[in-house]
Image (tube, rainbow, N blue to C red; front, side, top):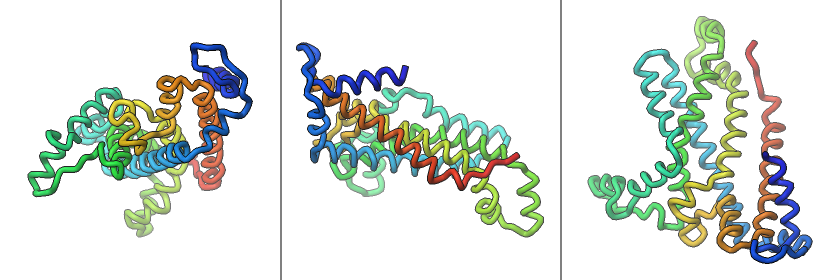
Length: 267
């Protein structure tokens, strides 16, 4: 289900094919065609988008988990409310935020005008369009790290925290020396899964910006879609898929190498 499409893409990547004429062998020409300023911008956009989503989602998810780490009904209500955005489809979320961020009639624009601030073209300004998508993505996905971090927090033995408190450790010291180190496996899991998911971002770009303005929000998977199904350059799109697969595998392995010595598991 996963390896066959990648292997087939590797085969197509050495051919020139537009779906309507027979494939023509061109060797590594498709890979050389990717070596361009446009492709470099696509990679840079994808990296910035991924970094923004992963850092903000994990940080906000951890903060919310620490705040909601209780078994009260109110805490459960907040947890369910935050997680509900994660299970809503990307289409619904994207359409909602297109309206909210509308520079003339959107709710965000209305609130800015109420406090005397000028309206902002969130999706039409090339300087902030990508970061607008980052914030929308974080809003939708923050429920996922929240739930995972809550599971990690509830797996930490309470006697460790109680012993530290009896020894005079404050809340910050308990978090720094006990909670955070024991959450390392959870953090690594979230780092890898959120990175892979953010690199695969497509729906939000397709619906909200179509890669624009110009190419300010053109990220990797949308670039593959555009090359394959708008320009019908199947060979070039397949070459991008092969490079993308190698990047994901390499990045995942690098993250594991960097963090494996910092992992602490409870008994």
